[in-house]
Image (cartoon, rainbow, N blue to C red; front, side, top):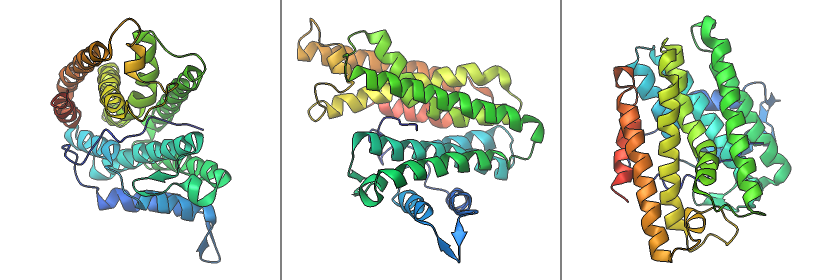
Length: 295
């Protein structure tokens, strides 16, 4: 099971391309493959397709497609990367809703609410498996094994971050570095993955480190904004930057420090993103600049 932070902070005014019909079709095809029985999709596939149809900004799909095309990959290979990253993200959302007992996402009932915990687990697992099937379609077999290994490493990073978040519910995090490490895994790992896959697929292995660092810094900055906006509704045990910085500081001071930390991370993200070859980090840089305007 994997789970990540809610993506509410990525709102419609961000410079994210509109959903790409080819990516939507590919995700649906992968989720539906081998699941039909007597021409009827089983309940897990129906639940998964319903979740995908509920919307979302497809940020990770956009990052993968934009980076892939800028790096000279074929459109089909860029679509494969975008679909894989988006399937992994949506798997994390379904599992996240299950862990949190969330009843609504994007204004409609979650898979957990509509179908129960067992189907929510299976729907997330189906999207995880479908993401690997997407990677298997990449046109250069020589790098597919490396891409699969990279996907595993990033999922493991997300799980580690989520474990840190769960632990924080019993032992509140009061150290900024600890908070940043948890959030970098939960929010940054799957944001960086589409960039890393595109770079790996195009042969730019030396840029994987900077791409990962850019995405992790972006993820921390994004999460801080989300924390600031959710401060009123977050419970006392929630992992929130204001709680982390609250010891010895007034609420106003904690808010000021949080914005300073968030701005620093977003500037790092933008700088590193713009250094990637062939401007592969163009979209991530634009997203970081937009977030900076909200701090």
